[in-house]
Image (tube, rainbow, N blue to C red; front, side, top):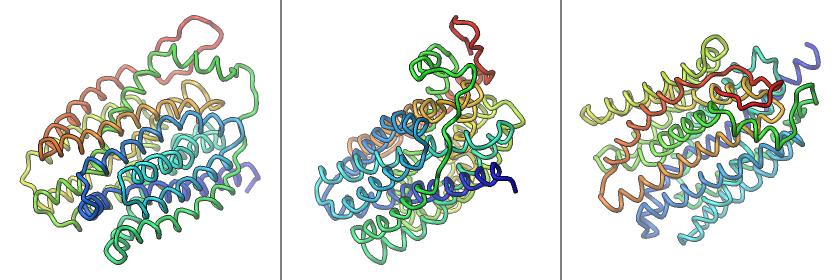
Length: 402
């Protein structure tokens, strides 16, 4: 095996392990909503607001984390992000006030996630592999995040039942510390200068003048709204309707399990078919699945079927979305531009998780947010239909239309 191929495989391996831990730990947060809110006397809005801040800061910090990874490599960014993530979990386990919850689960973990998840890691992968293999490689790393959700959720529930919420979060902090040595091994090589490369400011101007870039951002807003609302509030929704808490844990694990296949297949398909058309199909199918779930009689069986169907589509948007950014703008500023698109994902995440908690405390149910998730899915399907993944032509200075 030649050195270049071995380097690429190591980037994929270590990047996958980092994303597995970061996403696996994060996807268990919904299990803490009910026990923490009940024991500490909070409404669900306090917990939801902290996680909304987490998603917002994750998104706001992501372009900066991505720009640093593009400039200096991913290793340093992942190590710092892993340290903040670990500290946030430890402080969250010791929180007994709304402020403490917001600073730990919201600020520290939000900043930590910006350095340990998709934009930084996929940027490193995009630079390490050949263009024709890029979409599949991104699908593999994205699938690793789903494997983390599947593999770690049962363990998170076990820790919660065995130790209680506080000690469980402290134990999760110890597990999260593994991201530090793994991140140190993620020594990607920043893209070498090439003809046609742009300075950072010009790259930002180029993206800002590209219609397809903004359509991609708006579509990713919808992805964040849907998946974070479901990931955080689905266990509470099921509990309110008389479904055992173990069912909520199992369905989130099913989402993670089937998303392993969904993200890998999406990455494979993205190398062979139009990525924007695939994304349109994903968002439209999500809207149909949510509609069927709400119309069918609620039971453990229909809930498991919902988890399987949503799992196939859960993070399948990630390799396709980042693949479009790489195809259109190249890989020189991939982490930074991917981070800007991801910011919109996190703005949607903020709205989904916060609005779910706010309207639940106000109305006692999630009906409005479920309906919004359906309507937004249809809108995202329409937006992606008009996106082109053709590379920008940098010989001309006029605005590039998608």
